[in-house]
Image 1 (cartoon, rainbow, N blue to C red):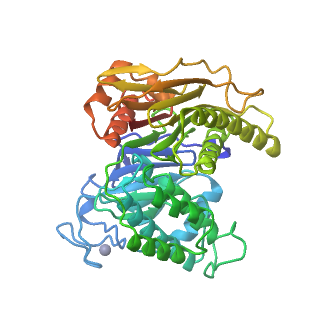
Image 2 (image 1 turned 135 degrees about the vertical axis):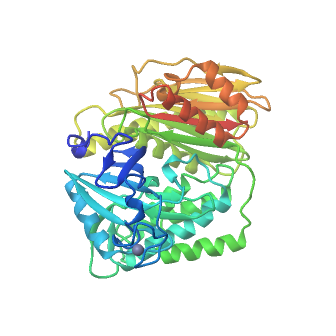
Image 3 (image 1 turned 30 degrees about the vertical axis):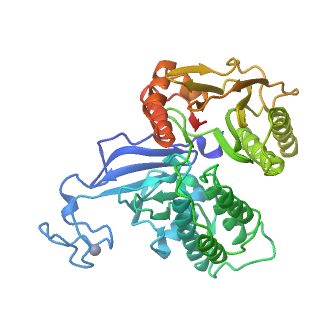
Length: 477
Ligand SMILES: [Zn+2]
């Protein structure tokens, strides 16, 4: 439980107004320390006079545009974020006062104090939060996003903004391919630009690496070349965001990013009831068209699922020699994933002195030319849709043994001979507990595009209660 958990404010319900002129339409995303809402100014005709661009309240009620800055007036939707932790408010308020803005950086139009919350308002043009988008993005889209976000990070560094965490909840993605940062975690505002230092664990290099890491989560598993670029940036190629933008540009000119439709998609959602998403997932190419897919669902304690998933991803990268994986080699790798993840979680807890339990389910699927090798611990599961029949791969275990638990893990490992047209699904408890296998099968059967399929699966789980975090990964075999 995070320190800010106890004073987490109650959600604003849709409808009632906030302040004089705003009303909430819906919650867009909840995170451990933030709630993001969609709001509008459709209440009480205030929209006729207040300008959100410059704050001018004195345009006549009949005006079409602000009499001060000539921005259009009228009905408008905005994103509103609520934060409540003291440290988070302080840095952000200092950032807001500087009014730093750019094409790729959305500064708050206004901030309000509301009880112990700080509400910040941002312009909204129908974009999606990246965290609510299924992965992957096409190579071309990802490159455009990399370039734009590197630009935003450089702007922040120029103004001396010390960033905290940079994640997919801080990115807005437009349907026209635009990307911008908003609602940042600001640790501190310096009075001078942040310049390269010798230590890559400090900004600016730290933020460049965080951005590369964020981008690589959205890289198509089939796109080896682009993944290599992102991995090299994550491990410390460019020192500054400008250098990163340059590297992206150079790469894009040399490679033609494939426009192929991705055969896999994943989406992870907090659900309706929880405030924090403890599910995590990854995928990695294994050479020769083989690949590894993994989903984890954190059960207790902090960070176990994310750490398990990162460990699995790193191991797969290490074992990938470009040579196609045979079935026996894939089996060995799946087994190794569980041992490595288990050791990593237990090791991290020992080092941090954490005395409670911290553990996670884990489902790892290695795909070879003609087979799947499915390993699992706990109740995160894999299925195959063949024709219109859904078949579970292996038994769904109770959460008796978990990764990060006290003893060695013994995953159930099974093999499945694939046929062309088979479709793999990996889902966390939040999916299968809410959505019946019949409905899952129907959705998988009806949605040819994997991204649409995962979107519909997550929506179905939320419509039916969304009691737990929900993750769905779909792979066409
Ligand atoms: Zn104005």
